[in-house]
Length: 83
Image (cartoon, rainbow, N blue to C red):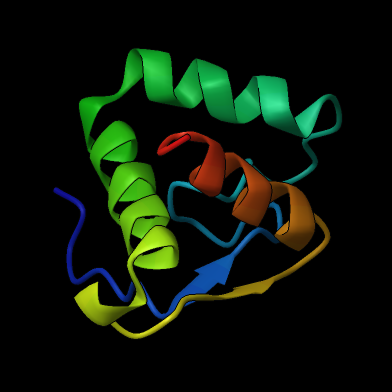
């Protein structure tokens, strides 16, 4: 369903696809958007948790690089899953 997942590159550009990217044309509170996605989609929840785990335990994988307009918020959100 989700295809190949590259946890080393996290794109937050609206319309780019992936658990951290809102749909094209989306506007609003990004953190609230991510929380809604996590609450409603177990696949998104798992992917965000994996990214957060890699961030807090770098030995578990290549450190993700965040891109796009919500890069900082996405990184902070993924970290918050493990705090």
